[in-house]
Length: 208
Image (tube, rainbow, N blue to C red; front, side):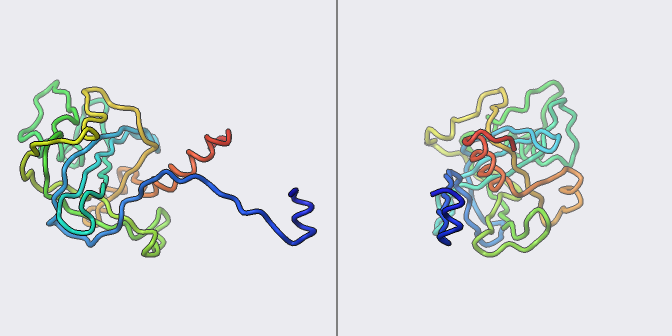
């Protein structure tokens, strides 16, 4: 049915779009959650390089086995500051600070379980409140290394070599307790919405 006929009959066609995103659920904020590392992704967005660390929830309950991410700005020149989230998480996983000229590979997170602070994303990029259905939770911070895992599913070996994997479309989020640091790092919490839109536009041959 063409647009002229649709107008004349007062009917319109429904339009369907693919959705392959697995948006994390929104869970209560807290510092008691245990998560294990499963994979890492690298992206470049808003003129900065970022790494996205994905974790699987181990704490028993309705969110067990769900995956959540922690997004961090990264410095490809190696000039890390004390406030960089990735550097602090890397030191926690490694057990000591990196030596000069070290390669800070995401493999230090492999096979490890952490106690994490989880935080629900309740506002969009324009600081408007999200509805409960639009909210999701992120790993706000790794607080301590709890233990190592004895068996690792195959997916945890994805993107864990020494080089940065070129995956993802970009994601980042700020902590409620450090909003000033987040703002200075150019943080954007609407990655899933951008990813869905970008993948659809690429599928139909349009430029974003």
